[in-house]
Image (cartoon, rainbow over all chains, first blue to last red; front, side, top):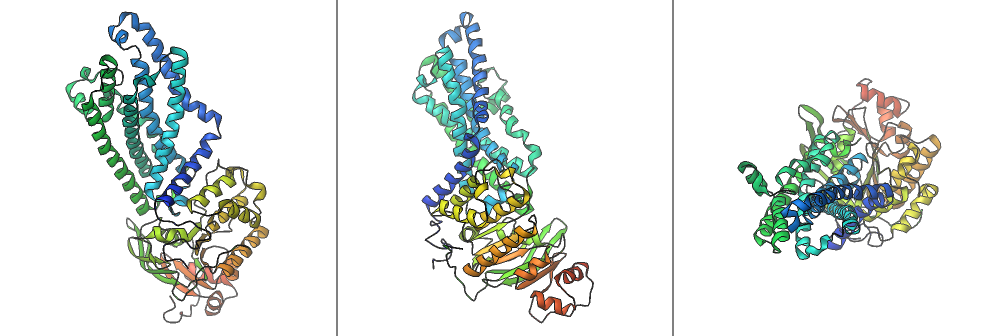
Length: 283
Length: 262
C-alpha cells in the first residue's frame, strides 16, 4: 500500500506530487477550457473580431492624418502597433478573468477545489488560457494588418516580444485582481471583467505620450507598466532604439503588480473558504 | 465491477472530527460537534434543513474553513494538509454542477486528468458502462435530465477510486429504478473497495438500506447516534422516517444513547 498522501494505488493513479503531477493538472485545466473555446467557431471569430475592427479604424485614421502629420510620416505604423499591443493587454486580462467567470457560471469551483488541483495550478491554467486567447485574438488582427495595410508588427523584432510579455503579464495581474473582486462580490461584479482595464487606458499612453497628461496623472501613469511600454514603443519607432530603462521599469512594476494580483486572488479564495462561497457561487 | 483496486482497511477511523465549529457572524451553523467514522463503513449524516449537514460536509472536503476544531481524514489534518488526502477522496453535491457546455465525456476526461488517472479512457469507459452513460458521453452535460446529471456526478465522484466518499443527497433526482441501481452500485463499490462513505440524505429508506451508522444533527449539534435499527428501537418507532421526525422536531420519548456513543 502506498504511503499516506501518495496515490491510492500506483496502478490506477499517477503520483500526486512533483512537477509532472502539477503539469498534468494544469494541462487538465487547459483542456477543460480549450474544449469550450475550440469547439465554437463563433467564439473564436468574436475573439479576433474586435481587435481587427479596432485596428482597421486606426489604420484608416492613420491614412487620413499621415499626409499632414509629421509624427505619422516618421512612424507610419504607430497607431496600428499601439492598438495591437493594447489588445495584448486587454485580451491578456480578459483571458484570466473570463476563464474564472466561466467556472463560476458552471458552478464548478467546488469540484475543482476538492480535487488535487492547487491554487497555483489553477492560476497557471488561467494564464495558459490567457496566452491562447490573446494569440487567437491579436494574431487574427495582425494577419489582417498585413493583408490590408502591409503592416508587419513583427518588424519590431525582439522589442515586440518584450512589449508583448510585459503587457500580457500586467493583463494577468489585472485579471487576477478582477477575479478576486468577482469572487468576493459575486457575479454581479462580472462587468468588471470587461470594464476594469479601461480605467487605466487614459494613463497608459497608448495613443499619446504621457507628457500630455497633467503632472498628477503622469505620476500615476509611470507607476504602471503600460506607460513605460508604450513610451518605449514610441521611442523605438521614432529613433529605432529600445530605451532599456523603460523596459526595466515595466519589468519591475510587472513583478510588483503580479504579486499583488496573486495575493488578492489568494485572499479572495481564503475569504470564500471562510464564508462558504466556493460551494454556492454561481448563476 | 471490475478492475477495482483494493483499498486499505484498518482499525483507525477514516474521519475524525473533534469539537468542530462554524460561525457565520453571529450565526452558529455548527456548534462543537465530534464524531469518528470507522474505515469501510457507510454512515448517514442526518438532520432537517439548516441542521448543519452541508456545512459539516463542506468542512470535511476542505471547501469551508472551520471557526474552531479539527478534522482528520485518512490520518491527515484536513486543515493543514488537505492536498495530501484530496486525491484519495471525492464527493457529490446538489449544490455543485459540471460545465454544461462540455460533453459528459469531456467532463469526465478533465476530472480524470485532474486526479491523475493512469488510464483515463479505460476508467471512463468502465464507469460509462456501469452507470449506463455510453449514449450520453458525446452529449453536452447541460442537455441532460436531472437524473442523468446525477448519474454523471456519481461517475465523476468515483473516477479516482476514492477511499472516502462524501455524498450529499446522491440519489435525490433519480426515479426509484435509477435510485435503486445507484444504491446497488454504491453498495457494491463500498463492499469491494472498503471505501468509507458519509451520506447526507433525506431518504430514510436509503439510509436504512445502506448505512450501518447514523449521526443525527439538529441546530448545528450532534444530538444522537447509532445504527438505524438501534435508533428505531430506542425511539420506539417503526422506521427511520419516524425517528427522523422525532429528532428533527425535538419530540418523542428518547431513550438516551449509551455513554460514549456520540
